[in-house]
Image (cartoon, rainbow, N blue to C red; front, side, top):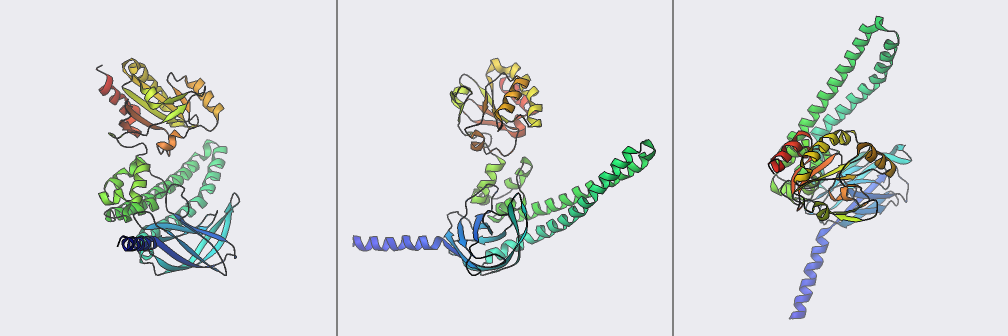
Length: 396
């Protein structure tokens, strides 16, 4: 009886494994046999392919396993190249795609492909993806054509402006007219961008109860800033907790949100001594962790404000820890000499910025001594930092 049960259980497990698998058969024109293709998940982070295949007689078959809790949007592309066609794959999928790859130049030695005449058979999810994408994509294409016209006109405007300047005040009216043209183009450009952006946001609100919302959010923007947080916050909990939603949250709130624990870290100083966050925060009440770099203008503009707050509150339990993302150690040391930062400074050899998912700088986190986040981003800079420190330490 026990043996029969084990056989039955093994069968169930085998079926479960099979049910996770997908198969995509691709018929491709324009590429030679032996070309390697891959399916790579849509993401703002670099991800490993979920399937790879080699072209033989114009065909290849991708097989793999879905481990995520949602269907995956993937780029079908030639390995180590630019240019792709998106597909949706899910557990137990088996469908076909026909398309043509045409090399369309290269970027620093890496080939760029244009994918045309794409036809997918047997994937309702892929059909749905392109229906959802269609309205915003149409605007993107119109926007792209407009930008081409704008950029074609821009060099002419610049040349005319330079000539007018050389001829002096007699041509001031001409220069003003050229500047007016330039401002008009810039104004029209911004309007077109806002129309496209707002249309995308409206679509995302419509899709916010399922994985489609966060998927299309990743598809719409190349990167996220705090301005996109309200879009994410409007999603349902189901959407926020899915694989795409978690990716967005990690990018929008890289170190976490107020009330959560920030990632713990250890980092070495110039003498190769290791410092943990706990040791840096010892006997302190509040710690500002500041990710910066010598080449970052906004980072260095914020330094006078941080210095002022440090002088006010260093004896009341305030500490600053600066972590530089400089690749050039000499540039970092030169900046330290110029800025004379009176608190612990480190060069990020250990990848602390990766722990905090830092995508852009300045990135600042105001933490309690136990690592709990008090404020982050713009809420830990400038006037906001001043007010928060006054609130926390001003009466001590």
